[in-house]
Amino acid sequence: MADVMSDSKQLNVDSIIDDSGSDSSRLVDPEAERRLLRKCDIHVIPILWILYATSFLDRINLGNAKIEGLEKDLHMTGNDYNVATLMFFVPYILLEVPSNVLLKRVAPSTWLSLLMVLWGIITVCQGLTQSYAGLVVCRVLLGTFEAGFFPGSIYLISMYYKRHEFQRRYTVFFTSGLVAGAFGGLLAFALAKMKGLGGYNGWRWIFIIEGLFTIVLGAISKLLIPDWPEQAKFLNSEEKALLARRLQNDGGPAQMNVLNRQSLMLVLKDWKIWTGTLIYVCMATSSYSTAFFIPTILNEFGYSASEAQIHTIPVYAVTTVVTLAAAWGTDRLRHRYAFTMAGITLAAIGYIILLCQGGPKDGLSVGVKYMAVFFVVVGIYITQPISIVWLSNNMGGHYKRAFGAAMQIGIGNCGGIIGSTVYLAKQAPKYPAGYGTALGMLLFGGILCTGFFLGLRAENKKRDRGERDYRLELPKEQLENLGDDHPEFRFTL
Image 1 (tube, one colour):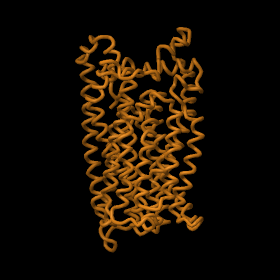
Image 2 (tube, helix red, strand yellow):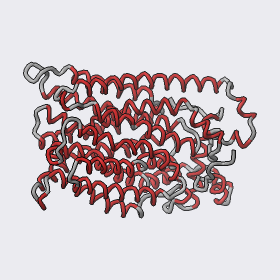
Image 3 (cartoon, helix red, strand yellow):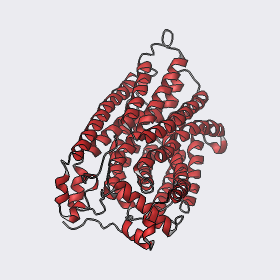
């Protein structure tokens, strides 16, 4: 089969290194390496952090609007809110893989900024809609335009860092969503006070103001988002050569820079991708249900709408600190499995407490239930970012990483559909189906993480014993496009 797609945008390691013009450039100078990392940290992470915070805010502000009168004004009944949250995920899931493939053909600064402007427009439209049907249409379009941003950002970040430098940077990026959750509650509290201005209810101003901010930021971001390393304007030729050498040394011969029948089959038959995807489904079920329903859950504890908005802030603030600490620890130890299980255990304890909360008179106190919410959110957000990086660490080659990240996040976001449907209004305030489903998915995720760990460890031992060395006899064009199936590649546990 002829190549399905040429990789004109790939990082051409050999040509970049040769352009440096001397053998001395092949040696890695530690001080130059530190300067390079600082440059990447300044130019890559902060802008994507800001943009993802905005993306997450525009995604979850539906939960803030809900307790400020959204349902009443749009005449929503029963599980209409659940359907509105669910519809976001249909295009979001379907379009993530195509978006990442397209990203290889378009400058990231152009593609990501365009998506942002478009979803900002739709966010404003949510504040202007006059019917439930209009809200559902807006949620579908929002999912369409947001679909490519998260996997595209992960893919872009991964092209600048070694595998064991990636977790900390990715987690810093990921915690922008947590900060958005905390800031979103405070912002919603303030914007809701605009009630009556222009004849609009407070919930409408939440969407309108946040959407306008997104449009302006998206337009400016075209100038700030970095492109692929070989096109990066903030790097000189020597720094590009050093970056290429570092990534080549880190990945070794595990390359996949040509997309053809062989490489496509290696992607589709890779048990690691499917296991990592199922792990993400389990984590996303809990994280999305929490993000969309935490204001409602706190409201059901007895807090007023304004108090519920404010009480989300400490939860997300503490979670941000713990998540960053876990990322530092897992990179420091170069180990993922134990950290994922620690997060799952903590979240499971929180869900068990909420399931056993009892009635309003003879049940657990509001303080204990609030503590359980901390356990749930902190535990989930320890495990979820690590599960994404764990899979990425074990993908070798451009196309393997691109497909792996998009498949894990795209299909994994089916957890968002599950999480959107399990908190039933008729079961308030105990939500047994919601808490029970989330707990079951967490436990299943723990089993999958254990299987993932054992499978990777077994494969490393086989390669240490030379049981995969027969692949070295493959034709050169196949051997150089095996990705992490290359026998010299070792997996991160």
